[in-house]
Image (cartoon, rainbow, N blue to C red; front, side):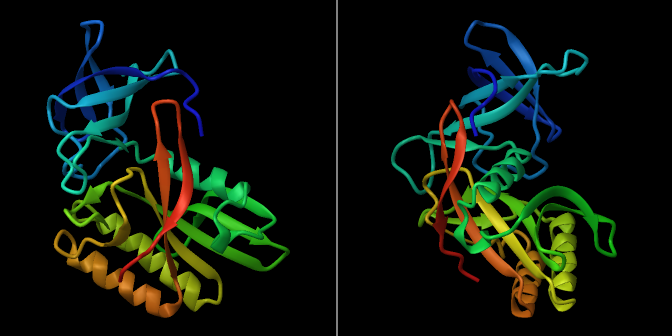
Length: 241
């Protein structure tokens, strides 16, 4: 997926209240950008880092910029700077695009790809619903992974996530009802070599992930190539439960 307009580069001054980022653009202007990321963004929000913003395409929007990428100079898993995607809305689009193109082999072969479909007993929306024929369905929940350790092990979540645990419960219920269900971890940085639950951050999430995996929920991880021109899902990574 290519960015619809060229990204604008600058320097991160401050991440404020989760949803706001103060950035000094290369032309000297200081702007406030929206941050589509509710996590802690551990290692991905260091002041002074190089960042890239996308311009808002809605003239009525209060904040005219969205924070998309960051260059991480002090990655624990890489001696050189790593470009990472931090917009948590983008992975859903990447996953839907790759599923429509049948580039994610374990989830290929479906006739229809729908997004943001209501389902479950806890009033959830599934990120992607795959359908084949009249009765075959696969419910796919997409999560963005940016947290990494010195061995290149990526993990999710980067802060305690009741919402994430709710999504796992919903997927488990779908699997128990006879449908196919999957968690797809989207990795938007090149220094991650595998993915696992972040037990040190949210042990309840890890326990729930293992519980629903035992019920038949598939756990997949796919890594993206990240550039300032665009982001594309390219390769599968091992998942360690």
